[in-house]
Image (cartoon, rainbow over all chains, first blue to last red; front, top):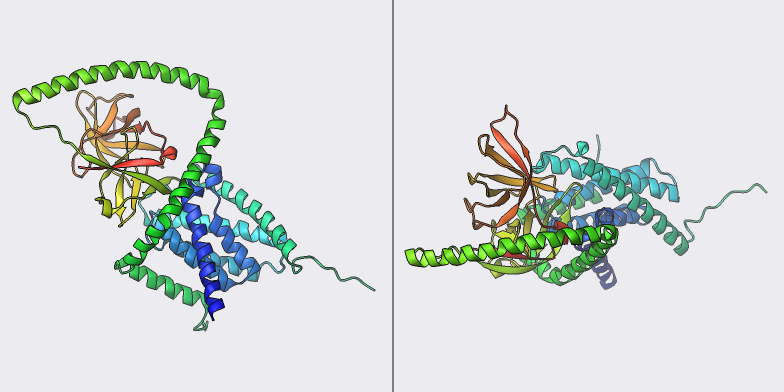
Length: 176
Length: 267
């Protein structure tokens, strides 16, 4: 019981720290670097290598901390991250049948796309932003930068995970 | 019929999110939030300073080529400003004498609270605002003006907690300010942010004469922001004959990406 609680506290601490790093460190960097979405990368990594329940935990704790920092209404990031986790789970179960680098790369690509469209739509609908986000060059530029970071992270994390476990190494059935 | 299990993870997290939203809306989570901010403030401040240092280093390397031309331009600007400053000092001394001769009340004064920037929000499109390490404990409240180190107005407080406050930048679309143009007519209008990049001044009557280079200051109307704080200078005027109002684009003399220390103006 104590072990489980301490694991839960550690998990929450890591996710909350990642959210603080996102707002305090990453957003202070020049535009290309500021586009990196650390929480989304952790969310997809958790979904791909652990389970859906843990990924929802990442979305919940990360979204909560981001909402405390955010200038949008409370719940903005919480809803965006929970819905992204749910849709990524749907894509993972329905479309991607193996645990390869290609699957991980595609999943992180689609999740980043979905998350940014959702955040843009929520901001357009519920805040006083007048310009339509899809017509803005800034939106597409930031999305392109974020996709580059997401794919780089996918490449790095998958190889690190493959080095740490044997489960990800491919095997082939050979005729005797 | 679709059946949802009672312990379905999505259902559990959706209920928990709803509960949090309820607690936050009614201010019941405020003590926990204040505790969170008190714990997070030192770490956030340190991380933001590192991010800014990296950003500064990166920009300095990017713009190395233009440095010599920038130095020349700035030297010329300093020479012009030195002359203007000495003239202003003369006028200020004369103004003080005249005020005392007429027994006129002293010009409005204000105190400032210096604060460190500990985080900022960079949304997909724009930078919406900053979080500073001062709050209601230091006398801050919503609608107070925030100035940079050189005294330019950079935003206003939108939300104040016990130990932290959120500041919207003048370039943010939801940051409206009452402003005055320093032209002959002392034209008044409203400024708000334009895509997080520049400031837009609207509701300027068609007959008012405005020109690029005119300084824009706060008008002191309708709020806690005192009159006379510099917002920026007019760079472009939009004057269509079929429109009731004119619009102007204003550029602030501040790099909003470099803000690490700001001051909150308390009238």
